[in-house]
Length: 187
Image (cartoon, rainbow, N blue to C red; front, top):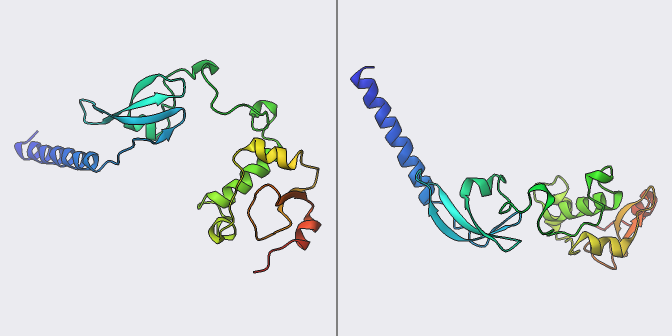
């Protein structure tokens, strides 16, 4: 290897390190953010390579250090208490979203779809719902299911009696396509 190629390699390595350190310095404080069962409590320090390590509290109460990258990419979502199905359940099982039942129930699919089109700006229907102010007001699937009950065959979730209103108790029903055509909001 020639001296000039070593110098170029050294300059590139130095440049990469300086870019990486600049990126690290610009990192956002994640205190209070939630990742699965973990809530970030604060910065614990850095690895020898300069990566952030966060102190996190798991839902089971245990404090655990987690590398920033493992939080962001979803690799670490608990202190380890969730391995093998042990540990606390953050979301009580209602049996409608479990793949073990053969997939999500029609009620859960309707709940998820309505919530997505109101809350997720990347959803293709968001411009017709969330962007115009229609909000999804149910706190949980349990509340949604208690309000609507089992979904009859051939129906979907409809906002009724106020088609321009929010998805909320008192303004939703299971409706056939014909009922929905008669219940359109006026633009």
